[in-house]
Image (cartoon, rainbow, N blue to C red; front, side, top):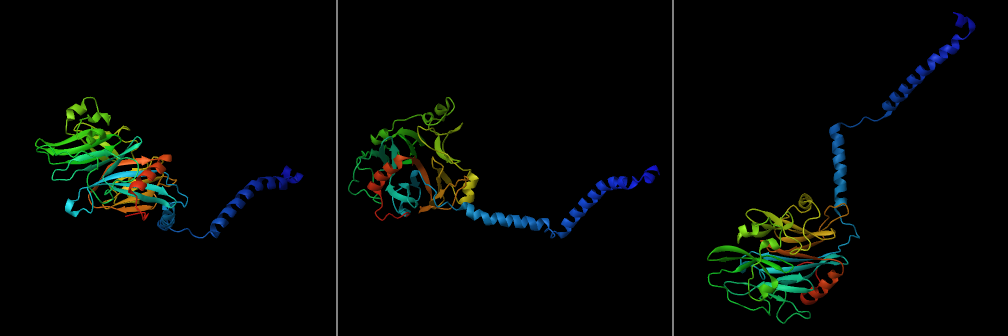
Amino acid sequence: MRELEAGRAADAARRRFTPVAMLLAGMAVVFAFLWMQPSAPPLAERGHEETAAAGDAAPAESEPAADHEFADGLLIGLRSDVPPQERTGGRYRTLWIAPDVDGLRLAAAVDGIVVPYRLDFWLVDETAGETPRLAAEKLPYGDAPPGRTETSGGVPGGAERKAAPAGETGEVLEFAGQSYVVLTRMSGSGRETLLTSLSSLASGERRRIPPDEIAPLPEGEAERAGNGWSVSRREGRWTVVTPGADAPVNTRASAHDGLCVPWTAVLEAEPDAVDAFCSPGGNWMAVLTDDALVALPVLGDGTPGRRALEVPLDGWTKPVMAEWATNGYVAKWTAFLAGRFGRADGEPGL
């Protein structure tokens, strides 16, 4: 009453009303904002819209950039297990896929397996006859010898032709890398795997090398395995397999091996993929399917892009060698391989 009489009641009322008025005004603004907004779609519809937007972006992400660099070259050796009467060429074949101004091209295709070792190239192929054996020779620099063409087949011209030992049913190349060769053969005692060298193969001998020289096997495992071991492709790597251990081959036998993207990403790009090889620079990869070898760029986000090259293959084709060239060696390998075994028409595929 004294405050009313003193005339201070109005000021007090204004002081008490100001916070309440501000609160009510803020709530009114919020409700007005919500009232003016359009109704949001149901959760199911929003999820569909987000999925559609992501799907629209996926093709763009899978396309290689116009300036994508295919810096490395691949020399890959293949073995066809199709019966001889159904093959269009020899059993063994080597493809040289090199960078080009337009991406990648098949610069050379050779009957036999061309193995690079140090500054030389060796040619491994099988001899003719009912019980073919493997032979090797060092390729001289210069023009190709007469009669040796992409589809001529036959054995290396300078290799010594020796008859197979009695009871032997032939030899099959399983792996070649650096100076090493792994072959299997059947004899009266059964199937055996042999690791030897290029020079030993060229001389007609079969000097036996223990498998732990090319793979970090546990101590004593090579002796326990004896002839019962093999080389196979597992998860994109050359692997020595024994009854008691598995070990990837070391750099003595393969200078570069392994994948640069997860295998699941390879299958997303190529659902029919059975094997893959990734370049040392991680800029592209070669993928084997049942009937083709395809090259895919590896994009900046680490995912495979669309096909840059496709080379048709016979069915039942198995890789036996994969060697990469980088930097200045790409041009040197192209000069030798394309100059000696290259295709005159320059087509990018077969």
